[in-house]
Length: 101
Image (spheres, one colour):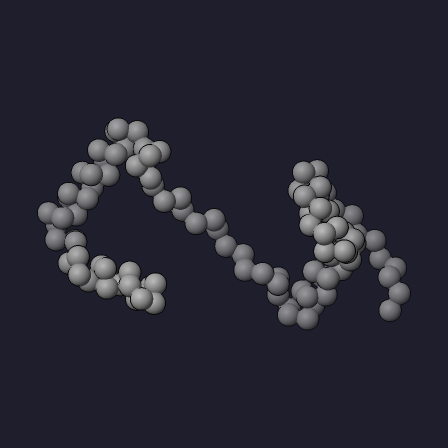
């Protein structure tokens, strides 16, 4: 089937430039890459990758202010008083299972 349709898209210049570098290293053009993407959409009847929100950033003591740190300590203590904690052995067991250790 001859290629006879044109597709015009607006994209941020830096995203385009970064993508072109990746495609150049793969030895394909931007046009071929877009064509591959569209063919995968047709074949799979879906977007060929998972769409999801970025994971929530894990709070780090190194990036917290003193007020934020104290608030987290207070929340943890309130959870403890409310009986929301778990035994240490259980927590470490779950961690080991997650690490397949």
